[in-house]
Length: 479
Image 1 (cartoon, helix red, strand yellow):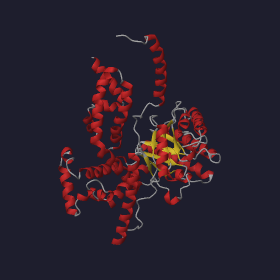
Image 2: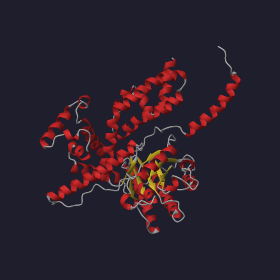
Image 3: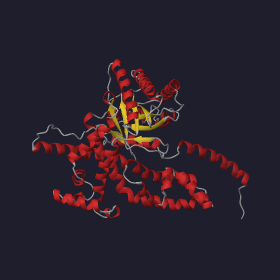
Image 4: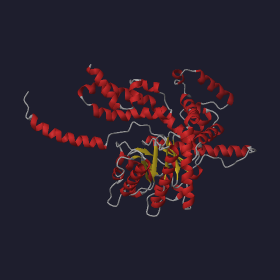
């Protein structure tokens, strides 16, 4: 076969291209396989206790059982698929529940009520087991501007409570603090709180941090704010005997200037780079961002179109970088207007309608986020937690069969392409498909066994890396 190109000429060009490709791959490695919490609960630092997350779970479960004592009530309130065919009488609901309880998981899936039944029971189990996945001890909006002496005392007390929670095993799997922003008027206060909190915490724990600890820096608008945090981290690590790079941070997208700067460019990538590898996530601040767009308070909701614009700009800027993205919060709390033990029937009904209305708003907001690729959001009250999981579990379970088909097909195709050396390109795409199941697994929507329908083995799933899966299959194929 006659060719026009010399091997030496091709080698020079392809080597140059290889350098560029590798640089691109390092910048955009794809979705990170690490566990991402489905939410972050922000709570005022002055209220934080070692057992706060445990108590939040109890409140959340009580709220669910009070206003949706069975899966039919929840399905009807949120208008789940096939809810119109569910029974109304208590006896009929009890009979249907008993029937579903007695079925095998495979048979249960053939029933029209399967989805609503499964979502409800998974919510109850989650609230009992791990209601809060991520908690931020908040020294910013959730705490407010207080006298310096009060914030100093709160920082010490909150750090001691975190240390106590570490000892008792009552902290959420992910935890951190949100300090005040590094604006000119608040930078001193933010640094002081960070120093007091970390110094106290490390002294109490013998130099140990909680698992998945992170510092949230809010209202970031310029890269220099991130760089300053990095330098402060280095000083704190050195002073407290922490290994370099131990301290991690998050940033917040809550001003128009972080979406587009004075030169008409999106500065998010430059802001992330300024963290020198320490920034792991970017959270959207619904109410600050809408306010920065001039939206009046009445219309400052997650459903406003300006939020979708910011979301898409953030996804475009940071997609494929491995930075976790989080949506904002719903500010309507599912709490009835009437309190007390001797409420009238009309008051009880008004409470139920008020809570169900707030549930629907939170459910639709969270579902909208999931559809748009934001797998994490904020919660501000324990009564919101049931709806976080209702939206999350409904999203994953209703998409499960389609996702199984897609990943199974991809695994089969990848098994062929591994023989031709296309391992990296397949891994980048496959990781995105695999992460759907990893996210569903992490939050309790599915079990490990339910991933096996994709054609992966349990050992392959546990690697959490499609790249490693393909490497392993290539090694087996070569034998």
